[in-house]
Length: 156
Image (cartoon, rainbow, N blue to C red; front, side):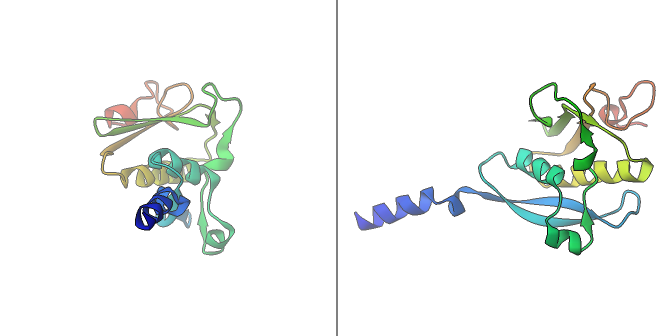
């Protein structure tokens, strides 16, 4: 009985409940730039969603002292059309991330770094083979072409 009680306590422990994920932050300002993975403990099995939330939140103070940064969080502005910052769906190997608030571009370099960190962060998961990142209006994020579909079609 004592062993069963101990097993139950361990199974319900918050330390046991989480899953370790990687969040890729930028280091430097090259295009698309170097990324460095840091680990976070997800509170539940929604690991892909949690990892994007952490990318938006940005690096810790200690990580910032190491030169890591995320340009994404401070660029998300305005009202949400879905009640959150983003929606994330993973189907048939494609992770579709649609922002529900406006994501302001920072220029070619910053935009490339944002997309690169999103891609690296989501591609860590075995269920994700490709990432499609959409703006609030459903167009590919930072795609200024007439069609706005380069991330869907794979062509610029």
